[in-house]
Length: 419
Image 1 (tube, rainbow, N blue to C red):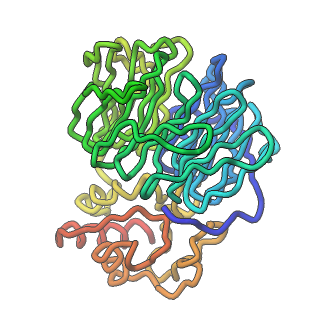
Image 2: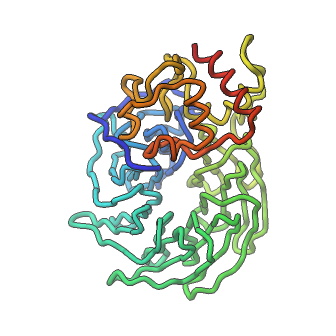
Image 3: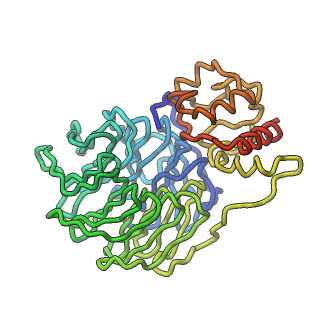
């Protein structure tokens, strides 16, 4: 994800009639539960933060302020949250920001914000500019430098010590003077952290492993999965730990023993975020299917409807093979001009359209130049060489189609479905 043009103005949309099951226009990247319970915030690739009333299961407000995906949230006292986005900015929000304006804006990161934590009036942020930062209630931040590459996660240990993890495979504890101690090193990127009540830090990495790191640096292997762990959540009592993976499942582990209690199976798409509610067993998850889901983590039971990935046949006249290939795109792109606001622009009238030309969509710098017209050939080139090569600076995830039959089917489907 790279920086995109800022929105000209903030936008807040009342959402009293929206359903908790399917609201975001792109993957749900972050969740935060209010300290006292009863409220939840979710954030996603569609550039929005949604504030939920859990008593009714309805969204109170949808805020679109960040210029890009919102990757991280942290709960604040009083029901507010702080959000961090790919625009490198942090925004502090009240519990119900109906005017769409943050209480405070924190700027300084030179890359996307990937992780947030808050404790005792201090906000900690982790970013892809290679730094973590500590933001006091007033005054400038303290910049924490030491990681080599992206910093993916940050938490506060029980004693108040900030701990970060990054692409360099290290887990670092930060002293008051800004000097870091490498308390664990794994050789592979680490994506997620969770602070346990006893001072231990849970760590999740690209190898699918979940490990516990004690304050003295002692490491204990807790769980080994087959797909990268991208989010961790621990309940307040420290008795359950949830590990969400790109494989689409969430492992629920009992603590301190580490026994696998449940495996929560959703629609089979990546689960990007997880947060325990204040009751200690209700778990909220969000993922690539754009939905916020609620689980009884201890029982392994979905609370409310959990839809399986749809295998419905496409509408008459549409290529069935191409429709299956397009499912990877459907989380971010609507086929109709009147479709829901999503992470990417709608695809109606795609062929013959100049790139960067859908009115009202905040394109990246590269796409605003509009020097490509979408045809069968240019779309095929996009998926052959990859969007990072054809349109550098795009927010589109890097993906390529190497199977010629899949490519031909996708092009047939798009020609039929976007007219």
